[in-house]
Length: 278
Image 1 (cartoon, helix red, strand yellow):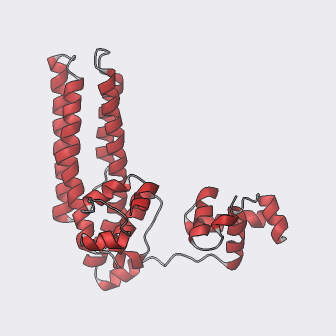
Image 2: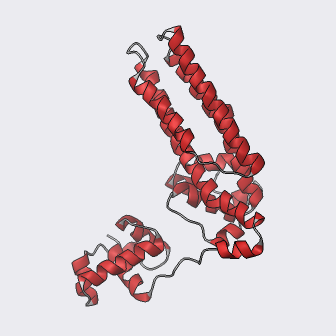
């Protein structure tokens, strides 16, 4: 578990919201999840969605989700935003705006109070009605707060506090982005699967991901080995255009665009030995 978090420290947030906030020690993911009564497959799926905005779960992964764990994540996320993140942000902005006039302070306080009500209404729709509204308005409001701090506060405001508040807003925006991915790619599909008639659910189902062909795997290995398109073409006795077509198909099927990402994919899927990569 410690190694997993080391790969992406943002996963600490996910661990906390699933109740996995004890000392990891040398425990494996499965051992820690079991001791905290969290389904391991569900946790790993949420990790993938949380870490990679481009990741799309397969239908089989969604069907294996333990809904109770996903709902626990949802509820604790909402509690965090309302009870911790927003109050902390408000307190910081209150301290930052001490040099402002009372009228200016009142405008900012009212703005933040309206934002809190907007969040509460938004989260109530999600939890009580299983409706997942678009988060655009939330992002726009946070961007407005950020721009007010960047552009409209007097120079007398403490620059250190200003920097801290801006970092807090950027962090909150990132957190909400990841939260939105889990809602869009896990929660909303789960609701559709559970509430739609079977005939509708079958029509909604997407086909499983396409497997790479034998030739595509060969091209992928060459890419992972650092070969350029011309070198790959010469090695496999094909044209550069064919190499480019294969690479496009590989990207379409895997959802991965960068050479580093494709290299990692090849290693994780045992297509190439990590020791053979320079």
